[in-house]
Structures are given as structure tokens and as C-alpha cells.
Image (cartoon, rainbow, N blue to C red; front, side):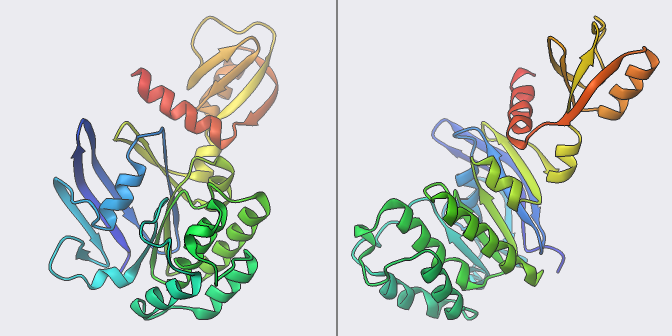
Length: 287
């Protein structure tokens, strides 16, 4: 099997919001980050994958099975960590583990124990009495050890302190060494995306902008500090210019243009991921 999950031509309308059409394949050994502006449909997309919301059009498959079909065996192949969980407040971490672990044949109890110690989670304390950050850590400790081929994480580090984020990113990197697993995550935090993601799936206002290989995307956006006066003519791939600073998404063509027109630059630096995502969303909005 060369894919763990597939969304094909999926669309969903909720009140005045329309998501889609969405097309995406999730392959083993990859981490895909869903990025976009607030309300772009990232969390809704995860809910469609979990069959918590049904698409109005299109198909969604996990392990080649339709998630809204009669065969629900796919549910043991995916783990889902939502931003907010409902109904857990009265239960301790140990009790929640007793409820959840039997549902997953590959549950890793040693990994659960490791995560509980790593994040200093009080397993005998009721969920509702924990701080928001500790609740998130417990939620993750009850998600990753399910050892499913596909893991869906909705803003997994939003309430974590900096040391815990580093521990979690290192842990996920080790967990992915198996090579047969995949993660789909949403995040507004570009540092987390930078460290974890292989691919970026960019959404804006419910519409798909595109899927990008992260390292290739970073390499294709450069900012130049030009020497002397810039020409009035547009430069290949030009996205913006301000004083002597020029940003382009076609650096090879831009540098060929510089050479042909006797233009020089003092330095060329890749943009950070957050700025690239902002440019992608701005470009689409202005079209």
C-alpha cells in the first residue's frame, strides 16, 4: 500500500463556510502540516478524516476503506488528538488509559509511561483539575502510544512550554523512525512546522492553495539586498521590493536577470517559513 489515507474531491458546507474541493494523499513516513489563516478549514479537514463530519461530496479513505462506509475497521488504524476533548473531566489519566488502550491492538504501554514521566503528568489527578498545558500533554500521551499507522494532531503544542515542545518534537521524530507511519498536524507555530513537517498543505478560506515540499519551498523564496538602484521593470518571480530589499520566488531566473542587466546584490538570504506562508496566503488573496 503506497498511501495510508486519501481525500478525493471532498467538499463540506457548514453554515456560510465552504471547504473544498480537497485532494490530498498521505503516504507512510511523512509528516504533513495543514497551515492557513484562522477559519481556513484545517480542523474541519481532520474531522472529515475521522468521520466526525461527513463530506457533502467526494470520498475519504483510510487504509483503502471509506470512512463513511459499513466497514469501520479503519478506526483502529488512526489516532486523533483534537484541540478540545469533551467528557474527560471526571476521570484520571490512569482511568482514561484503561478505557482507551484496549481499543488499539498495538497500544504501547511503555511509551505511555515514558510520556507521562517526560511531561510530569499526575496520572491520579482528574483531567478537569489539570492545567490546560498538562491536559494537552495527557491527551498526547493517550494518543501517540496507540501506535496506529496514521496520527492526526490538531494544534498539538499550542499550550506547551518550550522545554516540553522540544521533548515532544524529539519523541515524535523517534516514533516516526518506524517508516510505516504518518502524521497530519495543524499548527499556527512555524517553528514546530519547521522542525517536524515534510509537506505543507496550505488552505485559505476553505480553498486549497497547494501542497508543498517544505525544504523545496524554503529554497525557492529568497530575499536579496541589491546594490545601487533597482530597475523599474519587474524582476522574475518578484513578490515585493522595499528600498534595496527584493523578494522573489524564482531565484534562478532573478539571478540570470541580474547578470543580464548588470545588477549586483550584497547578500541573498532564504525567507523564514512564517514569512513564506504569509506571502502564499497574501498572493492568493490578491488574485
